[in-house]
Length: 382
Image 1 (cartoon, rainbow, N blue to C red):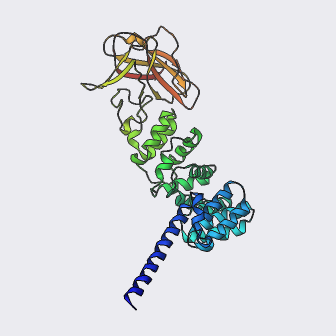
Image 2: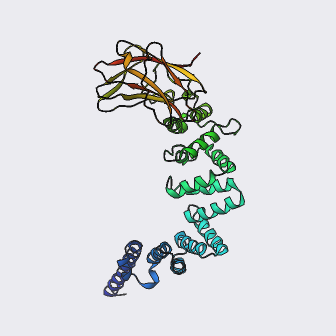
Image 3: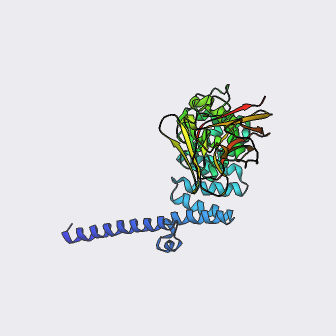
């Protein structure tokens, strides 16, 4: 071949290659930018077909979605997304058997295809095979942690005792998504308590998960004042977080700390005109200073009192003890009622509330003096 002819052929090959790259690039871009579709030859509009299938699905045009998905599969049979769109269309068109076959192919191509896993997750639940359903959830959570879909899947499993037990058994192997389950601060209180009760079952056969894995859940339960459930999880998985008495940390040794021992203890409340500080010198003490014109909440913790009356006392180091006042309530710290009893002398008599989220709170009346608290105790009244 003459040199000139070789150069012409080489140039043509290079141009063809560049055109293919450009067309392929425009096709990928067309998945998100509709205007690029016109630059792509009809038989190469794979990305556009996927985008159109997704758009048709969102608009309720299921037959059109199936047609676009079929085009995508024809030109790119190894991409599970086309199969997912087709399977989704078939489900919505009431073609369950066809959807099973289509999504089974998508799963064979990619175990992580979310639509296939979600579809067969539902099938496993219908059959009552909760272990298999958890396996499907596991595959989805490896790629899509903590979104609305995975939270819905978790919720479906948690509607039954068998589903909850299957979930916790899976947690024993420390999957990478464990924190989605254990650190879900957005979970409803009912769901969070249910998880705690399953984790805390002594006969569940679950290996201890340890403080690193469960401390966030323990703290969240304590923050919502569910002392019983927080202690259940602590006893089974993080003993260092288990309080020894009716009041956690009565000596204030762990006040303000991030350690397991402080997880179910005192929470402090600070504002611009209220200072709550743990003194570092000598014995553990907490200094509070309220420069506001109203009584302020200083600290609170969840408690589990039985029915009846209790005496709450505080040992105060120095003046100002008459400004401290306690309260027992449910769900959130209750404002204290006026009274003549002094917390730093004979103590305050308080009636235990009838609820699962009882909370003991300490408040400080306005004043110029700082008050130093050395110890807080709570005992049943005689």
